[in-house]
Length: 294
Image 1 (cartoon, rainbow, N blue to C red):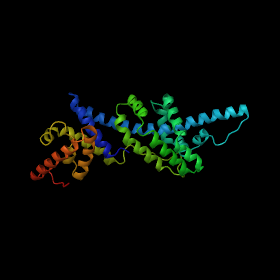
Image 2: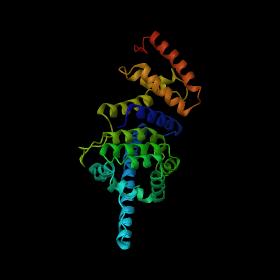
Image 3: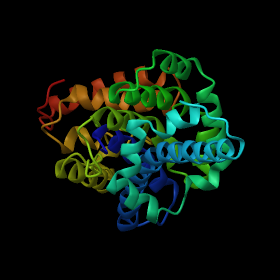
Image 4: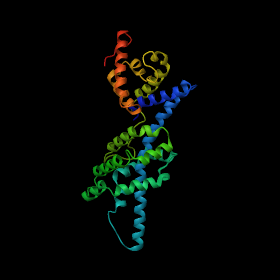
């Protein structure tokens, strides 16, 4: 799940932190990188578990409705709560063994955020998205899955209340959420009508190569500092990737870090950094230090 885009972002963040905190050892810094990546994966599971909490909330409301109807003798079919409680994708998530293991052991539980869950639920059932779904009366697995995908994309992505709550739980999570949201949406799309409780979620890393890439890039960034300062001044230390990984094309490295510069600096910084790096790469080619082409 943790891809190279996220790895590069974390290396930039933690390199900056390393040089802002004098006296921090390389060993401590590398442990912080590992912790930061484990927190990113925890956020992925935490946001998936929010969908389970929505289903549980719908089920509780539906049980209360049925109890009221039993007392009064009135009967209603296909209530909003019943529809969401029976959503096929949500039920699959609720039964998923890997997600249940996380929910049972997690420290931050969504039942502690009851007001937020209620607001999300209320906004969604009053939305045009949900209204159109009900009007179509298509309760197939594909329709149920698409409903939850739209719910997540519309009400959980770019939600300031959720962002604020996540920041209270972990300083790492706000910077990670946009990328993690894309992984949650990808996970939703992976479930099919044939899926069961054994359905695997995304692994923490896509491959062992990506795990090693994270360690090697961060280690090279810090240990080659004196060398890199000769090429890149002050806070532009994160270009160790150019010299350390011969198989990664220059344009891939350039584009990834220019995107990061746009987030963490001014709008014009990316153009400045791009021009500076072109000059550095040209000099490295002339000196025979670098053989890669852009």
